[in-house]
Image (cartoon, rainbow, N blue to C red; front, side, top):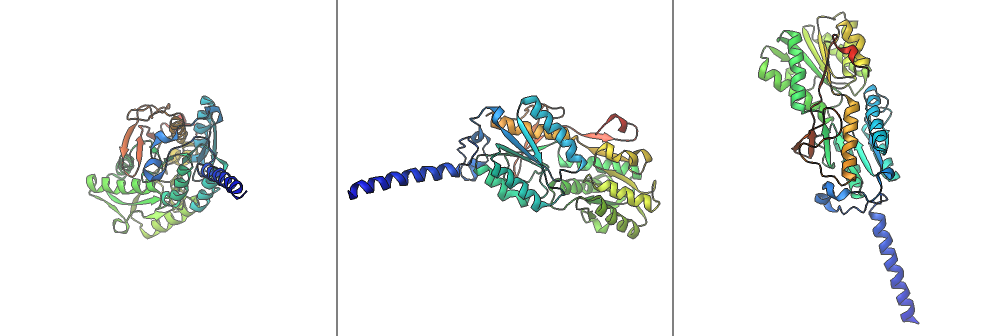
Length: 361
């Protein structure tokens, strides 16, 4: 009898071990073989065994209420409709890193098949993204060339090229001389700091008669992704530097705040502004000449490209140099290997008062 009960106990323990093992692999049903950090970052381990009509791809933005990410949703939704794949976009109500972590964790708990994330602070979400990968969930990112726990980061162009273009445009407006200031959303935002540092590098290389305020410290101010904060910080800088001739802002919230401060202080036409943002939101400033130029990429196309990468991985497609992500500007991406594998497109947009009415977003 003792032997009989012992055999029953062994069978129960075996079933318990199998159940625990199944729990640890997550609820996505992909049977991912990823284990250990090296395997976690191999896209080949994330091929789904489900039909694509059963997939759910979750897109996580910095701030789902911002015009920039409302435009991104257009591209995200288009991809889902084109490919008959369920794609949902979520994000915090404001650009708060802790809130973004919660959105990511909630989607993981829901058992999504893939995550496509635009990080506020790449470092703050590393643990959550690693957890996602360990559960067999595909992870791709955008605006995060230093994100470690991602299979691919997708960019419209290199940060160096974009930052240099911002500086070239500002220098042209300033007559290649005088003092200027640089604003970013957050210093924790990878691309913002890359753009800002690339601006300074380009200025030091090509425009010797220009000078970054605050002894060349990058950035001059941090807007916290808020138009109101950008306005207050810009006003402080303008009052402290009455000879300022130029201002750049790399978050979509920066330039409207800077422009409001410039207009309020009666400095329109005296302080040149080059920024990043959506044409409709900036139209009145550009047409009035308060903002000289907008430089950007279409967030709808970036969203489409990012979700395309996630779907290709789920389908088991290998993504190589020259891969076509199915949207203009990303037809033949380059691969740059650094902290992660970054897919570089060629999708810059340049907006002035002469062409701004051609863009409706």
